[in-house]
Image (cartoon, rainbow, N blue to C red; front, side):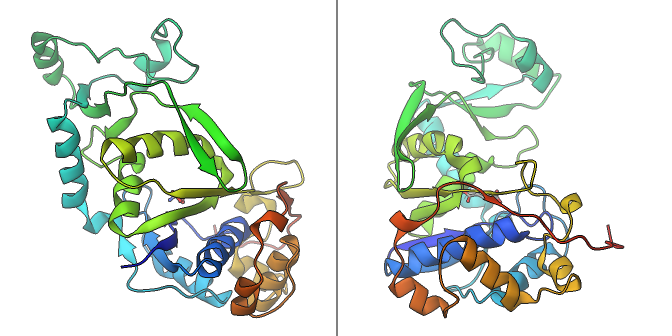
Length: 300
Ligand code: GLU
């Protein structure tokens, strides 16, 4: 199968220039290291009709290509189920009946890091579980035996972050992002994960879970985000941030690609040529501040 990198968008809306920049980087990291480049549609959650095709068109429009068929998470239920069963057989899964509010209001366990699940449902008795099942379907959580884990990141070095009893399957039966991502990356031969650095704090949980499942570790590169002038994450209301809107403002896909490459301090050359000369160490590490052109956006 061979090693692979990937881009894994959630089809919840149009890709904006920040997503496209991350995709270009994921492509460059993969191709410059002789890996395959895969696209996986993370449609378990937040999927909205029509956006998958639009996102793929946008990726192709800025010159990216990918190997094999696009994989959709909604078509892979059984593989997530098998991973859950494997963990459950090892005693590593428990039912959780907490609402968000209960979690927010629960006193945190002594020495528990900020933001960690307080462990409310970790040691329920069989009778308590049975009683709670009458009121609310259970989510499934990982019984983690560590509070932190360290991953190696190409741009951030060794990064140690929180691991708690995170959710593996939501209480509506949908596999959680952290489980699906780990299972899919391994099943697809992905050994290089390049994505926005908003997900850096999720990497320790994912690497820890991969290890519990006996899956090989991946190499990470969490790349800087694109921010607006107020240093907030770029959003549609900031102006023309998607390919369509930028086209209305007079920037076609080739022009957007040029802007992206310039922001990465790369010349406007064919992507294959850029891959041949790609040096991750020379990438800017600070966020790219993008001041979008203003257009009258008539469509929501
Ligand atoms: N689907 C996630 C997102 O669009 C990315 C997940 C990942 O790259 O691991 O934010």
